[in-house]
Image 1 (cartoon, helix red, strand yellow):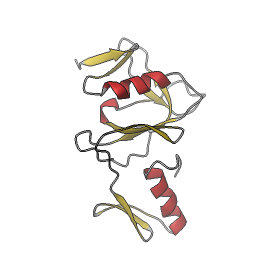
Image 2 (cartoon, helix red, strand yellow):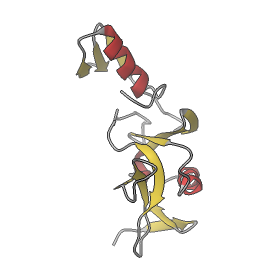
Image 3 (cartoon, helix red, strand yellow):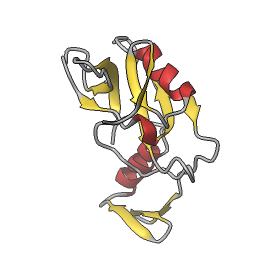
Image 4 (cartoon, rainbow, N blue to C red):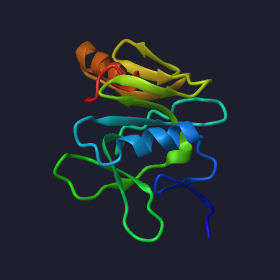
Length: 144
């Protein structure tokens, strides 16, 4: 069985920093502010550019081990598990509330394409589309 630490009734991976646990616990059940989590390598601080199931409201699962959930809308009753041990940045309504000490988002725009170092992340038909996606990955907007 996996080891957890419990903070305010929620179970977190034992390697998750207490500050991250407290932020998630603070926003649990609050449907007035949207939370966005950025997943990445917690050793290097490099963002993984994950875009699915990362924005919503913080909820808590039922059962004996109550893990944090990402609830997609105000009216939703459930959501997907948050990988709390992989969080490198958290924003609340686009305001940064946590950032890993070594956080970096190595993405650059080349024409209508976005690159992570030398790997192509995405291609768009228009400069406007790639600009919007870049702003999304940088946390300046919460939609693509």
